[in-house]
Length: 191
Image (cartoon, rainbow, N blue to C red; front, side, top):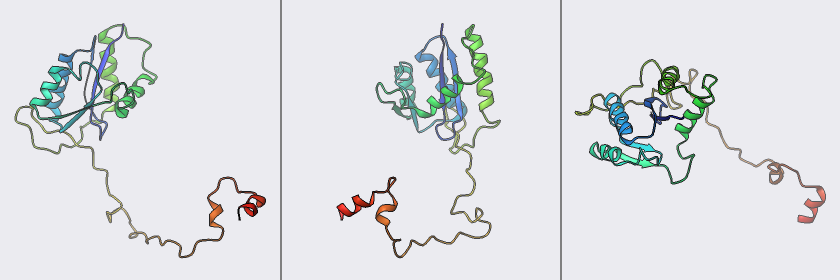
């Protein structure tokens, strides 16, 4: 027996916005998960999903149309078109605590609680839009990356001097980039 895991990730911060484990893939379960996630974190501008039956179903499509969310789907028959979620699933499946099989649906959900509880930060990332009247608080944004190269706080001793390109090329530049240097005979024949 196997169970289906559905995870909603923020692609920029890798924050798990919502997840559920079910006995089978179901469009109504996927719709409820999306409604819940959007109710807590706000409505995104775009969603990207695989081409599973739940994600391409009428209930999910109608929810996204009603909320004016642009849909994006993986290319047909391409298994690695969603690298963020694939990396998440690989991390889970190769974790030392991942069991050979789950005894029941409750066991699978309990593992999900522990696993996603370890991955999540204690507080979700900051929110960046006003609340939607129907679904509540705004969506989240990735944490501030800190000072950027253009930010003066980054360089304590002042900005580094600009790098000047060399004015004259060094001798024998034609052969410096080669992995295997040509033999002297080959150089003489090509001259």
